[in-house]
Image (cartoon, rainbow, N blue to C red; front, side):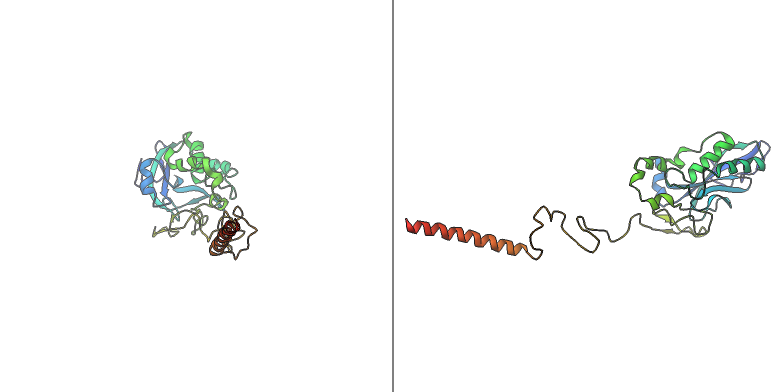
Length: 244
């Protein structure tokens, strides 16, 4: 592992050095990283360019270690590629079909999946497991996540990023400042359980308690009726005693 600029993904006597540049997408990584996981973006750096994948943009290249909307964490040297620029371009072209602009999925096909596929094509090895572990775990509950969250990438080829931030707390889009902004995963006024829309508030157990009762019937009214019924029964009982 290397946290510095390293070989810059350039050529050495033993071939072309391949680096995996790993970024933090959330301040939560300060806690998650020590657990062997995190919200990460990654790109493969080789021959002075960094290659990655995003929704809307597909496979794209950028300046190494400067992904917009993410905070650079580390460079991991993965090995040396014996080919040249033509072979690198060929490997990337072969992957464009599987990683097209409309094929992004936060859990099943994200930037880390692309990095892993490209590194496998170049070096016949995989990227470190911690980089995409959270997505692998997330496959167990992907059906519970909003579609918009799954289909938008937090980092993309444009200065504004590939999407709206994926619905979770991410670093600011300005790669020079790296200030964090908080974007709630779920927002809105919500709907009360049992209601037809957000403007009405009907008790969840309203139908069980007797939906035929008038809406303006209050608890006080019901208590008064019960009191009057009990008084009537008491008076009827006393009247029967008097006749005896």
